[in-house]
Length: 327
Image 1 (cartoon, helix red, strand yellow):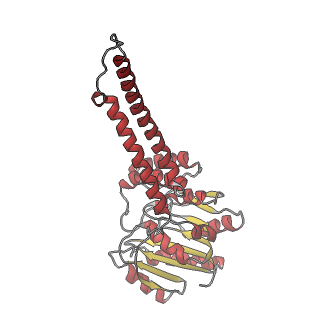
Image 2 (image 1 turned 180 degrees about the vertical axis):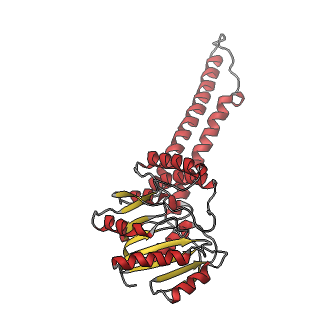
Image 3 (image 1 turned 90 degrees about the vertical axis):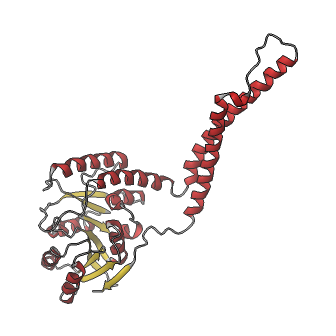
């Protein structure tokens, strides 16, 4: 595929009304700046006429490349599919609902090319959203900043810019699109910038995300923090806890058996003043120790299995592309 200045990757789901206006707006901005560009539309299994709209737009627009996923696989899968075929020196991602302004693209491009950022994330400082979305979003971003150490105000903003190397070196799956800056940092791309961008009020349709995204977001943050640290050596995590529980259990059972043998010996050597100790199996501590040993062994087995799994190819992005339109 011929290399471009900019590839614009747009994941979409049921956005037939906004697509003509969005594509026209992007073309106007790109032509004004004389960019060599392509627009990669990824239809994430839309139920409306989004794909028919894309086909109509592509007939008169040589810049459009489009992928259609067979089923709704999520925004992360759609982005990953778009990243796979993006050829621009700079890759821009944006949402299809007209809430991201294409007017920001030249400035994001300049920050990557001239200021040498690995990636730049948009910050919708002034938002046209109700409080039930903005307050949880602020909490979500604050926790992510604290855990990741990346000082961004809006991790979930769909408008971002990347160097080509970044999008070819990372994999996003599940709901990990919210944490692309975190994934990029873990892969060695540490120069991450931020730009205040316009937030347009939604013009067509309704939001595709509910309140559950914040719960899933926190779970995904825990997941990515764990995976990025232990994915190459899961035995370090499971083995450490396995050793701890095994030693605790072994220490308890050893002491109880030693105590039993010791006092039995004293009684048999006519130390009649020694009180007879109850059987080991009647002692609660024995079962605590035995349980700890079992947990330790299980953690070791989990570590061995995880090590084996990491040597096998992953199939996290196992979506199926149904159709493709090549620019």
